[in-house]
Amino acid sequence: MIRTHVMTYLVLSLALSLSLGLVSSHASAKEADAKAATKAKVMGLTLESLTITSDSIETAEFKVTLPASYGKKPNKSYVVLFDFHPRSQALLAGMHDWMSHNGDWPWLETIIVTAPDGHQGLGELKTLAIEKPGNQQLLDYLEQDLLPAIDKTYRTNGFRILNGFTGNAGLGLYTLINRPSLFNAYFVASPVLSKDFAYVIKDAPKKLAAMQGKPRFLFMSTSDSGFEQRQLASFAQVESIVKANANQTLDYQIKRFDGSYYMTQPVLAAAYAIEALFDDYHRVLAADSEIAKQGPQAILAHYQFLSEQKYGFKVPATSSLIKLGDSYLETEPSKAVEVYKVAISDDAKAYTAYDAVANAYAKQGEIELAIKYQALALDITDHPFYQNKYTNKLAKYKELSKL
Image 1 (cartoon, one colour):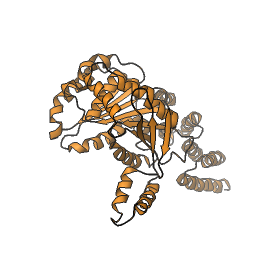
Image 2 (image 1 turned 90 degrees about the vertical axis):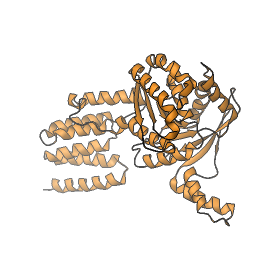
Image 3 (image 1 turned 135 degrees about the vertical axis):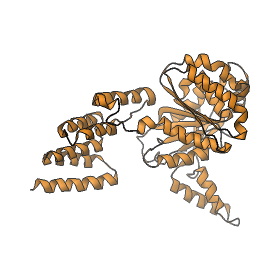
Image 4 (image 1 turned 90 degrees about the horizontal axis):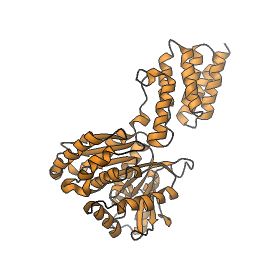
């Protein structure tokens, strides 16, 4: 059973805290709420409460932070990130809003879910995972109750990230080795691993080597701060286990942030992990890269793998195809057109590809064709910058056609 309660105002916790800090100590609670709500509406994020009823533990209220575009783009579906720590909501929501507001770059817009504070039943499930060999009741709860509820209530695209710091990071590794299919990516910052926490060190070699299915991503980090010193030996042990036993199913990065503060670790880890995870989504293949040198079909195959195997949703090949086409533009413009049209075949809404075709035709002196494709580019895009740019280019081509 799922019951979603939308809070009475849109709010980003971090913005709310800052807003309340500006309110005079003599201001009424009503005035404080009004100021906080005004500030939150500017941020555009929505904080909701998702109630999960389960046969395993008592009812739990999880916090769900929806990205700014959620209510504006009803046809869009979203990545989900889950963190067990309730205070991570403000941190992650603020980082995500900043790192995604410039066109999903570098952080694809994401629904952030955080656990309730001090929930006894959830705490007991975590304790069982940590202390009882083979106990997976926590994973059962995630798989049978929480994750299906999120998918049923919100427009999710199937790609999930598990984020954690210290003990919750140790539970992230526990989840990865015992039930890797629950999440597509695992961010573990300064994980607690000593005394074989959750039996990660004992179970990891065999379970990592046997891991199957679609690709999974692991970002694991720590530092040499005083608080982490007692975990460094076990961290190094797990690092060796990952390197020795991970098969092709697991893509991983392990990083040290030595010299930085302990409480900075989840910030650094989240930022670096997001960049590493989504790098192949955002990075444009160079024309002389091993994949691009094989031609446009190899580029399509690469992005098909990313779409179907890693992410589970469409990863556009447009920019990489345009990059390849651009490499032919000065010497073989007709070949450039062929490559650009592959991009159009792959995505009929790729307005930048139509613009590239128009530009190539203009270089060949085929102005009527340039007008045709520039008009198509203009018709497809709803981005103000490109609308203005394409309008000016179309006017220029029409003037040329009169000469």
